[in-house]
Length: 268
Length: 278
Image 1 (tube, one colour):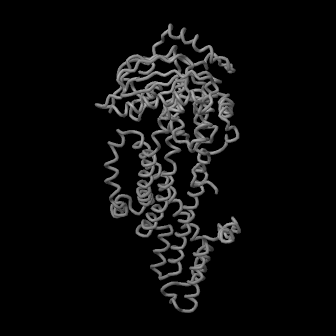
Image 2: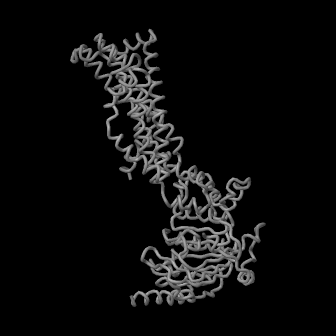
Image 3: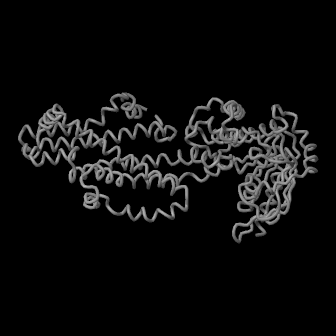
Protein backbone atom coordinates (compact mmCIF):
# COMPACT_ATOMS: atom_id res chain seq x y z
CA UNK A 1 0.00 0.00 0.00
CA UNK A 2 2.69 2.47 1.04
CA UNK A 3 4.76 1.44 -1.98
CA UNK A 4 1.91 2.18 -4.37
CA UNK A 5 1.41 5.54 -2.72
CA UNK A 6 5.01 6.52 -3.16
CA UNK A 7 4.98 5.50 -6.81
CA UNK A 8 1.91 7.45 -7.76
CA UNK A 9 2.89 10.51 -5.71
CA UNK A 10 5.08 12.32 -8.29
CA UNK A 11 2.32 12.12 -10.87
CA UNK A 12 -0.15 13.67 -8.48
CA UNK A 13 1.98 16.66 -7.53
CA UNK A 14 3.01 17.48 -11.10
CA UNK A 15 1.53 20.83 -12.12
CA UNK A 16 0.17 21.34 -15.61
CA UNK A 17 2.20 24.52 -16.09
CA UNK A 18 5.42 22.81 -15.05
CA UNK A 19 4.74 20.20 -17.75
CA UNK A 20 5.18 22.82 -20.45
CA UNK A 21 8.47 23.99 -18.96
CA UNK A 22 10.00 20.55 -18.53
CA UNK A 23 10.68 20.19 -22.24
CA UNK A 24 12.91 23.27 -22.17
CA UNK A 25 15.19 22.03 -19.38
CA UNK A 26 17.51 20.13 -21.74
CA UNK A 27 17.94 22.91 -24.35
CA UNK A 28 18.58 25.47 -21.59
CA UNK A 29 21.07 23.17 -19.88
CA UNK A 30 22.95 22.70 -23.16
CA UNK A 31 23.18 26.47 -23.58
CA UNK A 32 24.42 26.88 -20.02
CA UNK A 33 27.13 24.23 -20.47
CA UNK A 34 28.09 25.77 -23.79
CA UNK A 35 28.42 29.23 -22.21
CA UNK A 36 30.53 27.77 -19.44
CA UNK A 37 32.79 25.96 -21.90
CA UNK A 38 33.37 29.16 -23.87
CA UNK A 39 33.97 31.39 -20.83
CA UNK A 40 36.49 28.98 -19.33
CA UNK A 41 38.28 28.76 -22.67
CA UNK A 42 37.62 25.03 -22.99
CA UNK A 43 36.15 25.75 -26.44
CA UNK A 44 38.01 28.49 -28.39
CA UNK A 45 35.58 31.21 -29.57
CA UNK A 46 37.07 30.86 -33.07
CA UNK A 47 35.47 27.43 -33.20
CA UNK A 48 32.25 28.19 -31.38
CA UNK A 49 31.27 31.61 -30.05
CA UNK A 50 29.65 31.83 -26.61
CA UNK A 51 25.84 31.95 -26.54
CA UNK A 52 26.11 35.46 -25.12
CA UNK A 53 28.11 36.54 -28.20
CA UNK A 54 25.52 34.92 -30.45
CA UNK A 55 22.75 36.76 -28.61
CA UNK A 56 24.67 40.01 -28.97
CA UNK A 57 25.11 39.46 -32.72
CA UNK A 58 21.37 38.72 -32.93
CA UNK A 59 20.57 41.91 -31.07
CA UNK A 60 22.73 43.99 -33.46
CA UNK A 61 21.13 42.42 -36.51
CA UNK A 62 17.72 42.95 -34.99
CA UNK A 63 18.41 46.64 -34.48
CA UNK A 64 19.60 47.04 -38.07
CA UNK A 65 16.37 45.36 -39.26
CA UNK A 66 18.39 42.83 -41.22
CA UNK A 67 17.39 39.87 -39.05
CA UNK A 68 13.66 40.51 -39.22
CA UNK A 69 13.83 41.03 -42.98
CA UNK A 70 15.73 37.79 -43.57
CA UNK A 71 13.50 35.77 -41.26
CA UNK A 72 10.43 37.17 -42.97
CA UNK A 73 11.78 36.35 -46.44
CA UNK A 74 12.58 32.79 -45.42
CA UNK A 75 9.27 32.37 -43.64
CA UNK A 76 7.40 33.65 -46.70
CA UNK A 77 9.26 31.28 -49.04
CA UNK A 78 8.68 28.37 -46.72
CA UNK A 79 4.94 29.01 -46.36
CA UNK A 80 4.23 29.66 -50.02
CA UNK A 81 6.29 26.68 -51.12
CA UNK A 82 4.56 24.53 -48.52
CA UNK A 83 1.12 25.70 -49.60
CA UNK A 84 1.79 25.03 -53.28
CA UNK A 85 3.51 21.66 -52.85
CA UNK A 86 1.17 20.63 -50.05
CA UNK A 87 -2.02 21.39 -51.99
CA UNK A 88 -0.80 19.58 -55.10
CA UNK A 89 0.32 16.60 -53.01
CA UNK A 90 -3.00 16.58 -51.17
CA UNK A 91 -4.94 16.79 -54.44
CA UNK A 92 -3.01 13.87 -55.97
CA UNK A 93 -3.36 11.91 -52.74
CA UNK A 94 -7.13 12.40 -52.81
CA UNK A 95 -7.46 11.63 -56.50
CA UNK A 96 -5.32 8.49 -56.35
CA UNK A 97 -6.89 7.33 -53.11
CA UNK A 98 -10.42 7.69 -54.44
CA UNK A 99 -10.01 6.74 -58.10
CA UNK A 100 -8.37 3.57 -59.37
CA UNK A 101 -7.98 5.12 -62.80
CA UNK A 102 -6.16 8.14 -61.47
CA UNK A 103 -3.89 5.95 -59.36
CA UNK A 104 -3.05 3.73 -62.34
CA UNK A 105 -2.28 6.75 -64.47
CA UNK A 106 -0.06 8.72 -62.11
CA UNK A 107 1.16 6.66 -59.17
CA UNK A 108 4.04 4.92 -60.97
CA UNK A 109 5.33 8.21 -62.33
CA UNK A 110 5.11 9.88 -58.95
CA UNK A 111 6.91 7.00 -57.26
CA UNK A 112 9.75 7.30 -59.77
CA UNK A 113 10.05 11.04 -59.26
CA UNK A 114 9.94 10.51 -55.51
CA UNK A 115 13.09 8.43 -55.59
CA UNK A 116 15.10 11.27 -57.12
CA UNK A 117 16.51 13.32 -54.23
CA UNK A 118 14.92 16.68 -54.92
CA UNK A 119 18.03 18.56 -53.85
CA UNK A 120 19.84 16.86 -56.73
CA UNK A 121 17.73 19.06 -58.97
CA UNK A 122 19.37 22.25 -57.68
CA UNK A 123 21.75 22.67 -60.64
CA UNK A 124 18.87 22.14 -63.06
CA UNK A 125 16.60 24.47 -61.12
CA UNK A 126 19.24 27.21 -61.14
CA UNK A 127 19.54 26.79 -64.90
CA UNK A 128 15.77 27.03 -65.26
CA UNK A 129 14.89 29.74 -62.79
CA UNK A 130 18.21 31.42 -61.99
CA UNK A 131 18.45 32.38 -58.34
CA UNK A 132 15.00 33.89 -58.47
CA UNK A 133 12.27 33.35 -55.86
CA UNK A 134 10.62 30.77 -58.08
CA UNK A 135 13.67 28.50 -57.82
CA UNK A 136 13.31 28.30 -54.02
CA UNK A 137 9.53 27.92 -54.17
CA UNK A 138 9.87 25.14 -56.74
CA UNK A 139 12.31 23.19 -54.60
CA UNK A 140 10.30 23.60 -51.40
CA UNK A 141 7.07 22.67 -53.16
CA UNK A 142 8.70 19.57 -54.66
CA UNK A 143 10.15 18.52 -51.31
CA UNK A 144 6.86 18.99 -49.48
CA UNK A 145 4.80 17.28 -52.17
CA UNK A 146 5.82 13.70 -51.49
CA UNK A 147 5.25 13.28 -47.76
CA UNK A 148 1.83 14.88 -48.08
CA UNK A 149 0.95 12.89 -51.20
CA UNK A 150 2.02 9.56 -49.73
CA UNK A 151 0.35 10.04 -46.37
CA UNK A 152 -2.90 11.39 -47.81
CA UNK A 153 -3.03 8.41 -50.17
CA UNK A 154 -2.24 5.99 -47.37
CA UNK A 155 -4.80 7.63 -45.09
CA UNK A 156 -7.59 7.34 -47.64
CA UNK A 157 -6.74 3.79 -48.61
CA UNK A 158 -6.73 2.60 -45.02
CA UNK A 159 -10.08 4.04 -43.98
CA UNK A 160 -12.01 1.18 -42.38
CA UNK A 161 -14.00 -0.46 -45.23
CA UNK A 162 -16.66 -1.45 -42.69
CA UNK A 163 -17.32 2.23 -42.01
CA UNK A 164 -17.56 2.93 -45.73
CA UNK A 165 -20.06 0.08 -46.11
CA UNK A 166 -21.98 1.48 -43.15
CA UNK A 167 -22.08 4.91 -44.81
CA UNK A 168 -23.37 3.40 -48.04
CA UNK A 169 -26.07 1.42 -46.20
CA UNK A 170 -27.25 4.58 -44.52
CA UNK A 171 -27.63 6.24 -47.90
CA UNK A 172 -24.70 8.62 -47.93
CA UNK A 173 -23.97 10.21 -51.29
CA UNK A 174 -20.37 10.17 -52.55
CA UNK A 175 -19.81 13.71 -51.31
CA UNK A 176 -21.28 12.97 -47.94
CA UNK A 177 -19.31 9.75 -47.64
CA UNK A 178 -16.14 11.68 -48.29
CA UNK A 179 -16.98 14.46 -45.87
CA UNK A 180 -18.28 12.30 -43.04
CA UNK A 181 -16.25 9.11 -43.35
CA UNK A 182 -13.26 9.13 -45.69
CA UNK A 183 -11.70 12.50 -44.97
CA UNK A 184 -11.97 12.37 -41.17
CA UNK A 185 -10.65 8.82 -41.31
CA UNK A 186 -7.65 9.89 -43.37
CA UNK A 187 -6.90 12.95 -41.25
CA UNK A 188 -4.52 11.39 -38.71
CA UNK A 189 -2.38 10.09 -41.54
CA UNK A 190 -2.53 13.44 -43.35
CA UNK A 191 -1.16 15.10 -40.23
CA UNK A 192 1.76 12.71 -40.16
CA UNK A 193 2.45 13.84 -43.73
CA UNK A 194 2.23 17.49 -42.74
CA UNK A 195 4.74 17.08 -39.94
CA UNK A 196 7.19 15.25 -42.17
CA UNK A 197 6.67 17.92 -44.81
CA UNK A 198 7.41 20.73 -42.37
CA UNK A 199 10.82 19.23 -41.65
CA UNK A 200 11.58 18.82 -45.34
CA UNK A 201 10.35 22.36 -45.98
CA UNK A 202 13.05 23.91 -43.76
CA UNK A 203 15.75 21.56 -44.97
CA UNK A 204 15.07 22.35 -48.62
CA UNK A 205 14.77 26.04 -48.09
CA UNK A 206 18.01 26.34 -46.17
CA UNK A 207 19.98 24.35 -48.71
CA UNK A 208 18.47 26.36 -51.54
CA UNK A 209 19.15 29.68 -49.80
CA UNK A 210 22.68 28.68 -48.96
CA UNK A 211 23.46 27.83 -52.57
CA UNK A 212 21.50 30.38 -54.54
CA UNK A 213 19.90 33.39 -52.92
CA UNK A 214 20.30 37.07 -52.27
CA UNK A 215 18.22 37.22 -49.11
CA UNK A 216 16.89 34.97 -46.37
CA UNK A 217 18.38 33.14 -43.43
CA UNK A 218 20.52 30.79 -45.51
CA UNK A 219 21.90 33.74 -47.41
CA UNK A 220 22.63 35.55 -44.13
CA UNK A 221 24.58 32.56 -42.89
CA UNK A 222 26.60 32.29 -46.12
CA UNK A 223 27.41 36.01 -46.10
CA UNK A 224 28.56 35.73 -42.51
CA UNK A 225 30.83 32.84 -43.45
CA UNK A 226 32.45 35.00 -46.13
CA UNK A 227 33.30 37.58 -43.48
CA UNK A 228 34.20 35.01 -40.83
CA UNK A 229 31.32 36.17 -38.60
CA UNK A 230 30.95 32.84 -36.85
CA UNK A 231 28.50 34.25 -34.29
CA UNK A 232 26.03 35.10 -37.07
CA UNK A 233 26.45 31.64 -38.60
CA UNK A 234 25.60 30.04 -35.25
CA UNK A 235 22.72 32.50 -34.80
CA UNK A 236 21.20 31.40 -38.14
CA UNK A 237 21.43 27.77 -37.15
CA UNK A 238 19.72 28.46 -33.82
CA UNK A 239 16.95 30.36 -35.57
CA UNK A 240 16.37 27.38 -37.85
CA UNK A 241 15.98 25.19 -34.79
CA UNK A 242 13.46 27.59 -33.27
CA UNK A 243 11.48 27.98 -36.50
CA UNK A 244 11.39 24.22 -36.91
CA UNK A 245 10.07 23.82 -33.37
CA UNK A 246 7.49 26.55 -34.04
CA UNK A 247 6.20 24.81 -37.18
CA UNK A 248 5.97 21.52 -35.32
CA UNK A 249 4.07 23.13 -32.45
CA UNK A 250 1.64 24.76 -34.86
CA UNK A 251 0.87 21.42 -36.48
CA UNK A 252 0.43 19.85 -33.05
CA UNK A 253 -2.10 22.51 -32.06
CA UNK A 254 -3.99 21.89 -35.28
CA UNK A 255 -3.81 18.15 -34.70
CA UNK A 256 -5.21 18.46 -31.20
CA UNK A 257 -8.03 20.68 -32.40
CA UNK A 258 -9.14 18.43 -35.24
CA UNK A 259 -8.39 15.01 -33.78
CA UNK A 260 -9.96 15.49 -30.37
CA UNK A 261 -12.02 12.34 -31.03
CA UNK A 262 -8.87 10.24 -31.29
CA UNK A 263 -8.03 8.32 -28.10
CA UNK A 264 -4.37 9.34 -28.50
CA UNK A 265 -5.27 13.02 -28.27
CA UNK A 266 -7.74 12.87 -25.44
CA UNK A 267 -6.77 14.34 -22.11
CA UNK A 268 -6.27 11.66 -19.58
CA UNK B 1 -31.07 -3.99 -58.99
CA UNK B 2 -32.39 -4.58 -55.50
CA UNK B 3 -35.47 -2.43 -55.87
CA UNK B 4 -36.37 -4.19 -59.09
CA UNK B 5 -36.38 -7.49 -57.28
CA UNK B 6 -38.54 -6.25 -54.46
CA UNK B 7 -41.71 -6.51 -56.42
CA UNK B 8 -44.92 -5.72 -54.68
CA UNK B 9 -47.15 -8.62 -53.76
CA UNK B 10 -50.53 -7.28 -52.67
CA UNK B 11 -51.96 -10.59 -51.50
CA UNK B 12 -49.09 -11.27 -49.14
CA UNK B 13 -49.40 -7.77 -47.79
CA UNK B 14 -53.03 -8.29 -46.90
CA UNK B 15 -52.18 -11.54 -45.18
CA UNK B 16 -49.39 -9.91 -43.29
CA UNK B 17 -51.46 -6.98 -42.06
CA UNK B 18 -53.61 -9.53 -40.31
CA UNK B 19 -50.54 -11.21 -38.86
CA UNK B 20 -49.22 -7.91 -37.70
CA UNK B 21 -52.19 -7.06 -35.54
CA UNK B 22 -51.00 -8.65 -32.26
CA UNK B 23 -47.79 -6.66 -32.37
CA UNK B 24 -49.42 -3.37 -33.18
CA UNK B 25 -50.67 -2.87 -29.65
CA UNK B 26 -47.70 -0.80 -28.49
CA UNK B 27 -47.40 1.42 -31.54
CA UNK B 28 -47.13 4.88 -30.11
CA UNK B 29 -45.54 6.68 -33.01
CA UNK B 30 -47.23 9.36 -35.05
CA UNK B 31 -45.77 7.57 -38.07
CA UNK B 32 -47.51 4.42 -36.92
CA UNK B 33 -48.55 3.32 -40.39
CA UNK B 34 -44.96 3.51 -41.55
CA UNK B 35 -43.35 1.91 -38.55
CA UNK B 36 -45.25 -1.33 -38.89
CA UNK B 37 -43.15 -4.24 -40.05
CA UNK B 38 -42.93 -5.49 -43.58
CA UNK B 39 -43.56 -9.09 -44.63
CA UNK B 40 -40.83 -10.81 -46.50
CA UNK B 41 -41.04 -13.46 -49.20
CA UNK B 42 -38.01 -15.26 -50.51
CA UNK B 43 -38.30 -17.60 -53.50
CA UNK B 44 -35.57 -19.84 -54.87
CA UNK B 45 -32.76 -17.68 -53.56
CA UNK B 46 -29.27 -18.71 -54.63
CA UNK B 47 -25.90 -17.15 -54.10
CA UNK B 48 -22.38 -18.31 -54.93
CA UNK B 49 -19.00 -16.81 -54.34
CA UNK B 50 -16.86 -18.20 -57.13
CA UNK B 51 -17.26 -21.98 -57.13
CA UNK B 52 -18.61 -21.98 -53.62
CA UNK B 53 -22.38 -22.20 -53.66
CA UNK B 54 -23.37 -20.65 -50.35
CA UNK B 55 -27.15 -20.54 -50.68
CA UNK B 56 -28.75 -23.37 -52.63
CA UNK B 57 -32.36 -22.36 -52.99
CA UNK B 58 -34.00 -20.69 -50.02
CA UNK B 59 -37.80 -20.45 -49.91
CA UNK B 60 -39.13 -18.53 -46.97
CA UNK B 61 -42.03 -16.36 -45.95
CA UNK B 62 -41.74 -14.13 -42.92
CA UNK B 63 -44.99 -12.44 -41.84
CA UNK B 64 -44.82 -8.78 -40.93
CA UNK B 65 -43.58 -8.09 -37.43
CA UNK B 66 -42.28 -11.58 -36.79
CA UNK B 67 -39.03 -12.08 -34.92
CA UNK B 68 -37.04 -14.70 -36.78
CA UNK B 69 -33.72 -16.10 -35.68
CA UNK B 70 -31.40 -17.81 -38.11
CA UNK B 71 -28.91 -20.26 -36.67
CA UNK B 72 -26.40 -22.60 -38.21
CA UNK B 73 -22.77 -23.57 -38.19
CA UNK B 74 -20.29 -20.99 -39.36
CA UNK B 75 -20.09 -20.92 -43.12
CA UNK B 76 -23.63 -22.30 -43.54
CA UNK B 77 -24.71 -19.15 -45.36
CA UNK B 78 -26.75 -17.49 -42.61
CA UNK B 79 -24.88 -14.19 -42.81
CA UNK B 80 -25.02 -14.27 -46.60
CA UNK B 81 -28.79 -14.67 -46.43
CA UNK B 82 -28.99 -11.66 -44.12
CA UNK B 83 -26.78 -9.55 -46.39
CA UNK B 84 -28.97 -10.41 -49.37
CA UNK B 85 -32.11 -9.49 -47.45
CA UNK B 86 -30.53 -6.19 -46.46
CA UNK B 87 -29.53 -5.53 -50.05
CA UNK B 88 -25.80 -5.49 -49.32
CA UNK B 89 -24.91 -8.16 -51.87
CA UNK B 90 -26.29 -9.03 -55.28
CA UNK B 91 -28.66 -11.93 -55.73
CA UNK B 92 -27.60 -14.64 -58.22
CA UNK B 93 -31.03 -16.18 -58.69
CA UNK B 94 -34.45 -16.00 -57.06
CA UNK B 95 -36.33 -13.11 -55.54
CA UNK B 96 -36.68 -11.31 -52.26
CA UNK B 97 -39.84 -9.30 -52.05
CA UNK B 98 -41.30 -7.10 -49.38
CA UNK B 99 -45.01 -6.50 -49.13
CA UNK B 100 -44.96 -2.99 -50.50
CA UNK B 101 -42.66 -0.38 -51.92
CA UNK B 102 -39.67 -0.07 -49.70
CA UNK B 103 -37.61 3.01 -49.01
CA UNK B 104 -33.92 2.61 -48.16
CA UNK B 105 -34.75 3.82 -44.63
CA UNK B 106 -37.21 0.94 -44.16
CA UNK B 107 -34.52 -1.72 -43.93
CA UNK B 108 -31.67 -1.40 -41.48
CA UNK B 109 -28.80 -3.68 -40.51
CA UNK B 110 -26.92 -4.00 -37.27
CA UNK B 111 -23.55 -5.72 -37.39
CA UNK B 112 -21.38 -7.53 -34.91
CA UNK B 113 -19.10 -4.48 -34.88
CA UNK B 114 -20.79 -1.24 -33.87
CA UNK B 115 -19.28 0.58 -36.87
CA UNK B 116 -19.62 3.99 -35.25
CA UNK B 117 -17.80 6.96 -36.72
CA UNK B 118 -15.06 7.58 -34.14
CA UNK B 119 -14.86 11.27 -35.10
CA UNK B 120 -18.53 11.97 -34.55
CA UNK B 121 -20.20 12.43 -31.17
CA UNK B 122 -22.72 9.82 -30.09
CA UNK B 123 -25.69 11.95 -31.14
CA UNK B 124 -24.21 12.65 -34.58
CA UNK B 125 -23.62 8.93 -35.01
CA UNK B 126 -27.30 8.26 -34.36
CA UNK B 127 -28.25 11.01 -36.83
CA UNK B 128 -26.38 9.10 -39.54
CA UNK B 129 -29.20 6.56 -39.32
CA UNK B 130 -31.76 9.06 -40.57
CA UNK B 131 -30.57 8.50 -44.12
CA UNK B 132 -31.89 11.19 -46.43
CA UNK B 133 -33.57 12.97 -43.51
CA UNK B 134 -30.19 13.72 -41.93
CA UNK B 135 -30.40 17.40 -42.72
CA UNK B 136 -34.05 17.83 -41.77
CA UNK B 137 -34.99 20.25 -39.01
CA UNK B 138 -36.07 17.60 -36.52
CA UNK B 139 -32.99 15.39 -37.06
CA UNK B 140 -31.58 16.32 -33.63
CA UNK B 141 -34.83 15.65 -31.83
CA UNK B 142 -35.36 12.32 -33.54
CA UNK B 143 -31.81 11.20 -32.83
CA UNK B 144 -32.17 12.20 -29.19
CA UNK B 145 -35.36 10.22 -28.94
CA UNK B 146 -33.71 7.13 -30.39
CA UNK B 147 -30.83 7.58 -27.98
CA UNK B 148 -33.27 7.75 -25.07
CA UNK B 149 -34.89 4.55 -26.28
CA UNK B 150 -31.59 2.72 -25.99
CA UNK B 151 -30.94 4.37 -22.62
CA UNK B 152 -27.94 6.50 -23.58
CA UNK B 153 -29.40 10.00 -23.59
CA UNK B 154 -26.73 11.15 -21.14
CA UNK B 155 -23.91 10.08 -23.50
CA UNK B 156 -25.03 12.24 -26.41
CA UNK B 157 -21.94 14.46 -26.40
CA UNK B 158 -19.36 11.74 -25.81
CA UNK B 159 -16.90 10.32 -28.31
CA UNK B 160 -17.51 6.64 -29.15
CA UNK B 161 -14.00 5.77 -27.94
CA UNK B 162 -14.97 6.38 -24.31
CA UNK B 163 -17.97 4.04 -24.42
CA UNK B 164 -17.93 0.39 -23.41
CA UNK B 165 -18.56 -2.35 -25.97
CA UNK B 166 -22.19 -2.73 -24.90
CA UNK B 167 -22.78 1.03 -25.00
CA UNK B 168 -21.32 1.25 -28.49
CA UNK B 169 -23.65 -1.49 -29.62
CA UNK B 170 -26.57 0.38 -28.07
CA UNK B 171 -25.60 3.50 -30.02
CA UNK B 172 -25.50 1.34 -33.16
CA UNK B 173 -28.98 0.07 -32.27
CA UNK B 174 -30.17 3.67 -31.79
CA UNK B 175 -28.75 4.53 -35.20
CA UNK B 176 -30.58 1.59 -36.76
CA UNK B 177 -33.85 2.51 -35.03
CA UNK B 178 -33.88 6.24 -35.65
CA UNK B 179 -35.37 5.99 -39.13
CA UNK B 180 -38.18 3.77 -37.77
CA UNK B 181 -37.23 0.80 -39.99
CA UNK B 182 -39.82 -1.78 -40.96
CA UNK B 183 -37.28 -4.57 -41.26
CA UNK B 184 -34.29 -4.79 -38.95
CA UNK B 185 -31.59 -7.32 -39.76
CA UNK B 186 -29.14 -8.26 -37.01
CA UNK B 187 -25.88 -9.94 -37.96
CA UNK B 188 -24.67 -11.42 -34.66
CA UNK B 189 -24.99 -8.02 -32.99
CA UNK B 190 -24.19 -9.38 -29.53
CA UNK B 191 -21.43 -11.78 -30.55
CA UNK B 192 -18.63 -9.65 -29.15
CA UNK B 193 -20.26 -8.80 -25.82
CA UNK B 194 -19.70 -10.40 -22.44
CA UNK B 195 -22.40 -12.68 -21.02
CA UNK B 196 -24.13 -10.15 -18.75
CA UNK B 197 -24.09 -7.32 -21.28
CA UNK B 198 -25.47 -9.79 -23.77
CA UNK B 199 -28.48 -10.58 -21.65
CA UNK B 200 -29.31 -6.93 -21.02
CA UNK B 201 -28.90 -6.22 -24.75
CA UNK B 202 -31.20 -9.13 -25.57
CA UNK B 203 -33.82 -7.60 -23.29
CA UNK B 204 -33.34 -4.23 -24.97
CA UNK B 205 -33.73 -5.78 -28.44
CA UNK B 206 -36.89 -7.56 -27.38
CA UNK B 207 -38.31 -4.36 -25.86
CA UNK B 208 -37.70 -2.15 -28.91
CA UNK B 209 -39.03 -4.85 -31.19
CA UNK B 210 -42.24 -5.09 -29.14
CA UNK B 211 -42.55 -1.31 -29.03
CA UNK B 212 -41.99 -0.69 -32.69
CA UNK B 213 -43.29 -3.80 -34.37
CA UNK B 214 -40.65 -4.08 -37.08
CA UNK B 215 -39.87 -7.41 -38.68
CA UNK B 216 -36.71 -8.67 -36.98
CA UNK B 217 -34.24 -11.08 -38.53
CA UNK B 218 -31.49 -12.14 -36.18
CA UNK B 219 -28.50 -14.16 -37.30
CA UNK B 220 -26.78 -15.74 -34.33
CA UNK B 221 -24.60 -18.68 -33.44
CA UNK B 222 -26.05 -18.72 -29.95
CA UNK B 223 -29.04 -21.08 -29.92
CA UNK B 224 -30.15 -20.02 -26.43
CA UNK B 225 -30.27 -16.42 -27.64
CA UNK B 226 -32.32 -17.50 -30.64
CA UNK B 227 -34.94 -19.34 -28.58
CA UNK B 228 -35.06 -16.57 -25.97
CA UNK B 229 -35.83 -13.86 -28.50
CA UNK B 230 -37.44 -15.30 -31.59
CA UNK B 231 -40.95 -16.36 -32.57
CA UNK B 232 -39.39 -18.77 -34.98
CA UNK B 233 -35.94 -20.30 -35.37
CA UNK B 234 -34.62 -21.30 -38.78
CA UNK B 235 -31.76 -23.78 -38.90
CA UNK B 236 -29.68 -23.46 -42.04
CA UNK B 237 -27.54 -26.33 -43.21
CA UNK B 238 -25.53 -26.40 -46.40
CA UNK B 239 -27.27 -23.44 -47.92
CA UNK B 240 -30.82 -24.65 -47.29
CA UNK B 241 -33.35 -24.24 -44.52
CA UNK B 242 -33.09 -27.55 -42.69
CA UNK B 243 -35.53 -26.87 -39.85
CA UNK B 244 -38.17 -24.29 -39.18
CA UNK B 245 -38.98 -24.29 -35.46
CA UNK B 246 -41.78 -22.22 -33.93
CA UNK B 247 -41.15 -20.89 -30.42
CA UNK B 248 -44.48 -20.48 -28.71
CA UNK B 249 -43.27 -19.50 -25.24
CA UNK B 250 -45.09 -16.49 -23.83
CA UNK B 251 -43.32 -13.15 -23.50
CA UNK B 252 -41.64 -11.83 -21.49
CA UNK B 253 -39.73 -15.07 -21.48
CA UNK B 254 -37.96 -16.44 -18.51
CA UNK B 255 -34.39 -17.25 -19.35
CA UNK B 256 -33.37 -20.78 -18.48
CA UNK B 257 -36.94 -22.05 -18.27
CA UNK B 258 -37.45 -25.74 -18.96
CA UNK B 259 -39.48 -25.03 -22.09
CA UNK B 260 -36.79 -22.89 -23.71
CA UNK B 261 -34.02 -25.19 -22.56
CA UNK B 262 -35.78 -28.17 -24.14
CA UNK B 263 -36.17 -26.33 -27.40
CA UNK B 264 -32.58 -25.21 -27.31
CA UNK B 265 -31.47 -28.76 -26.71
CA UNK B 266 -33.39 -30.15 -29.66
CA UNK B 267 -32.10 -27.46 -32.02
CA UNK B 268 -28.56 -28.01 -30.80
CA UNK B 269 -28.86 -31.74 -31.34
CA UNK B 270 -30.00 -31.05 -34.92
CA UNK B 271 -26.94 -28.90 -35.47
CA UNK B 272 -24.58 -31.38 -33.87
CA UNK B 273 -26.02 -34.40 -35.64
CA UNK B 274 -25.47 -32.58 -38.91
CA UNK B 275 -21.91 -32.17 -37.76
CA UNK B 276 -21.56 -35.91 -37.22
CA UNK B 277 -22.84 -36.71 -40.68
CA UNK B 278 -20.21 -34.61 -42.43
